[in-house]
Length: 224
Image (cartoon, rainbow, N blue to C red; front, top):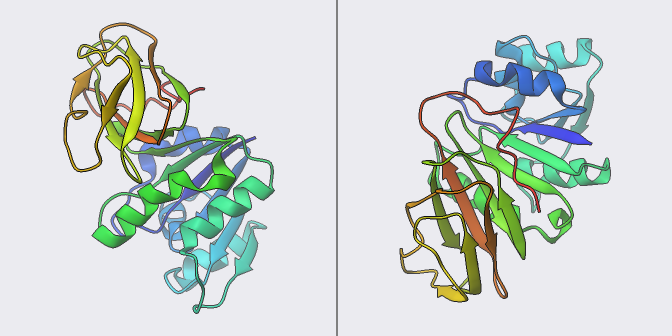
């Protein structure tokens, strides 16, 4: 099941992602993410969160379209995007694209990146997606479907990563280690496709950036 989650980002414009949203089996608005969907007249299937950021007009639009409204109390341990991710897993998601998760408040953006490491997501392909870049997590092995010339950065998350081996990247790594506080893995380049990354210990955040502003919603999805 392919799920698209729209996070709450006041300045986020969902227009470039219309095709991706139309193809999704399930569209979830994490609280104020429903505002961005309302702005382009696309109704979510589910709205989840404490709904403190969702406008009355966006909520009414979602309800009129038959969306399920899952309201949580403001005093909760999870941010709305975490609730949306857990709900997607419960619904049987195996591919999740997250829109509007980066930008705005630094604490929220960093927390959204950290959510990729949720143990509940181990069996899912999950990426943070913007108009010209994507981010996803490697736990063991990943094939990166990209284009020669794409910029790829490998960033350890949650501590150092060890036993890293790459294929198809300009600056090759063979059984290497990357430290959380060092920048060795930043700004590599795809030279052969498909590129591959594997590791023995730890987790790697992979960020791929491509030229131009075209949304590669028909490809570029991480696999592995």
